[in-house]
Image (cartoon, rainbow, N blue to C red):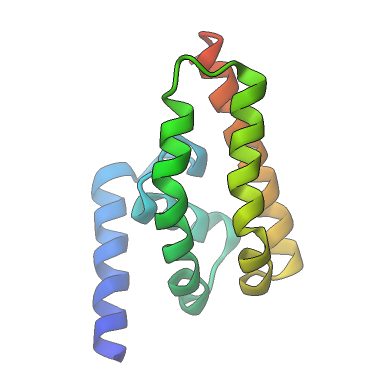
Length: 123
C-alpha cells in the first residue's frame, strides 16, 4: 500500500510539474495539476492530498463544463459553480483544518470570478 501511495503521489506531482507548474489552482481543472497547486498553497499533508484527489476528480468535469458553456449567463455560471463547491464542502471540511478550508474557499471564490470574467471577455 505504501509503495502504491508513493508511486501515485510521485506520478501526480511529476505530471503536474510537467504540465502546469506555474499555474494557479483556478486556472486548471486537471485534478493532478490542481491538487499540486492546492497542495502548495494550503500546505497539505500527504494524507490530505490522498483524500482530496477523488473529490477534485469528481468536480473537475462538472466545473469544466460550466466554465466552457458560452450560453450560460455569468450569474448562472456563478450559481452552478457554487453549487458544485457546496456539494463537496462537508467532505472537504472533514479533511482540511479550519484555516486550510477558509483559504480553499478564497481560492474557489477567485476561480468563480475568473470564470465570470472569461465570459465577459476579460480572459
